[in-house]
Structures are given as structure tokens and as C-alpha cells.
Image (cartoon, rainbow, N blue to C red; front, side, top):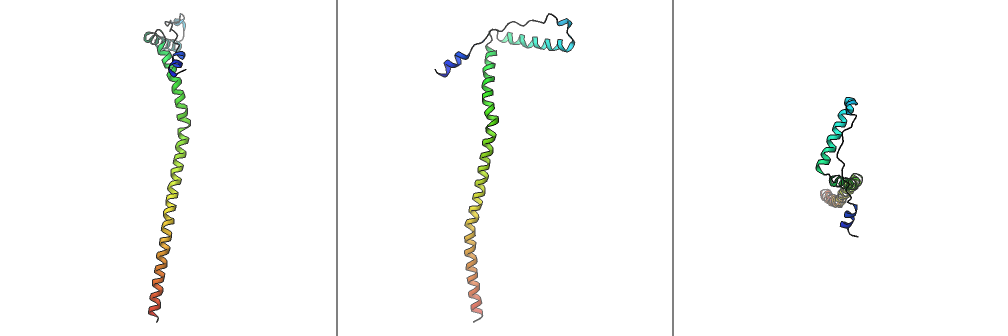
Length: 127
């Protein structure tokens, strides 16, 4: 079964019923009446855009997909970023240690050469 047939199988839009005003609207308190008018406006816009329910189905599928994409993005990406940051920090420290390990023998060799020169000069002066 390919992806397109799975999408077609999951695509089951239900028709949207036309919105109805609450028959008890005049007896509701102002806040509930205001909420009811907002509800009616939103439902009438939905019914006007798509009477057969395709927009609702499209939104349902896209929010489902967004949830499947946002959960790993929120949970996994910070952990991976932290691990990569730690690896970069460790590599930076190892590079600096390796740099010092290269410089240390060179400095020891220079110190030995300077000591030999000083000893040769002291021997030449005191003879």
C-alpha cells in the first residue's frame, strides 16, 4: 500500500451542518450571549468556506502532521544541539592541549640549548 492510497483512505470529510442560533439567546447573560455570537460567526464562516467539510478535514490532518513534527523538534533537537556543542567544546580543548604538547618539547629543547650555551660561556670565561 503506497502513501497516496493511505492518504486517500484517511481522508473522510464530513459535511458541515449550517450553524444555528441558540433559541435561548435573548435570555442569556451578556458574556454568554457574546460568546454565543462569536461561536455562531466562526461556525458560519466555516460553513461558508466549506460546506462539505474539506477545510476542517484539511486542518485536522495538518495539525496532526504538525504535532508529529513539533514533538521531535522540541524534544530531540535541543538534546542533539547540546551533544554537538559538548563535542565541539571537547575538540577545542583537545586541540589546545595538543598545541601545548607540541610547544612544550620545543621550549624544553630551547632551554637545553640556552643552558649549554651559558655553560660554554661560563667555562670559557673561567679558564
